Length: 350
Image 1 (spheres, rainbow, N blue to C red):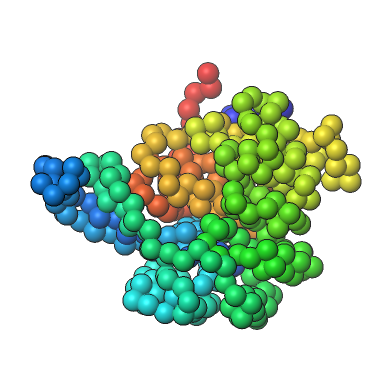
Image 2 (spheres, helix red, strand yellow; image 1 turned 90 degrees about the vertical axis):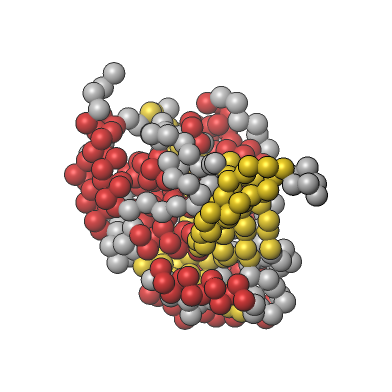
């Protein structure tokens, strides 16, 4: 088992990869929606019920779910092609307008009159989330909508450099659609990364290039409780082998990342498994929401820019360390990654 520390990194190589992300086209498919933050102060309890009264001071509207991944790619100078399903309601128009103002194309969205456009509203006071209200439809899209999504993907598949599937289990990514996408892009030799969901069977992701579960998701997918390096290794191997993936990256919060692959791809056994650990380098953890979106965005942009899994994961880990220091779902720029990379490499070795 190898621990990858800043003293072993090639700074110029990592900076070159960041620059090569510019213009790379990444197809992002999954559940899309809006994040709304209602921010205010609490000075009293309501006389109507034992709940705080929030005096609203600010409201923020952000791209959420898979749209936040697309936003991350855009800020990193990539070109996201966002494919998702929205309703035919007021929030759909708000969502499309927000995409356009962010510089993301909205023409790949598929409207479904039977669904709500997803909206997650968070009420926050003094950095504390008091309440979250979800407006969403959870039923799977029907065969007609599924076919429309796949037709749009077929139209643009030759344009993209890589693919990200964001599975939030809100109904967009059916098992058939996931497997159709994986089969299509595997034939074309393109990277397909999957951010899996707890409630989706692991076999749906069979053939993915890379899976990026967090610790909780990895435990659920493998049915192995991760308590030490041995159980972590066994969980990573189970997911890697069961999904027949090329790579697995388990994001571990304050514990950093664990990377799994085979030392020899023709010998896919436990003894041939390599596990590499990257410690976390977060300066401070303000809000972990959205960190996984940042990681998978950087991973895929790096890989399609010629990075190794290790190089891609280092950059993803650094970007996540920056992201968790921000409130809510946030994005990270190349300059922020470069600045933090330089700081880490310049730190004296202990």
